[in-house]
Image (cartoon, rainbow, N blue to C red):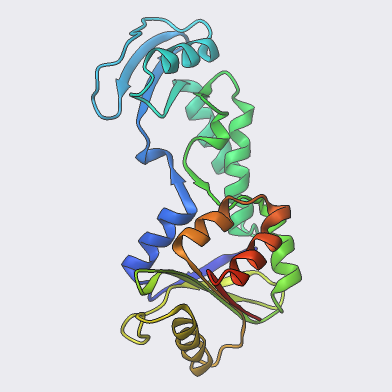
Length: 260
């Protein structure tokens, strides 16, 4: 869905930061206990905030059992535990680099980057949850890449623009403006520009301005959606199969404005 050469320009810092907070969960922001070892000999045992943790070890025999034991022993202090073997991590990153293909769409490469973690089940270990679902930036959209692609194919006409927004406190809180090419791949990502669009007002007013702004730039807006902030969180948490019904319910309850 993401073109290999996606243009990202004129992005408003506040709108982008808020969109990321809504859509992404960052392992970097989590409280982590990290154990790094070399063929079983521990070379690092540290909480990312420098907090003293229970269970200091010198050797790693079973990384899965250790990760679970450390998590349970430090309940309330960590969001997850990572136990990594140094050579496995080096091999993983080499494999990721070798997997890159010049014609890959960006999201295909990113998905493969996470999938390749599974090839090192004992070398890159996290608890709770498998490493591919814990590390890095994780989408909080309640749908797989295949499901998102299918939704785009069904709802977005080729060569059109989609405007998405989240409304909070009487103004637009977060936004994404996506341009799709003839193959329904995203070629451009930006946000609402406060220097060109008044972000204050009701959902309907803001969506009207966003649409007019894009129309004025020669774009064909095929879909516009602005939700209240709590409604956006509810929509994202819903399973993919239920999202259509959830969105209809939110619109009927006056918590979302949808135009196609």
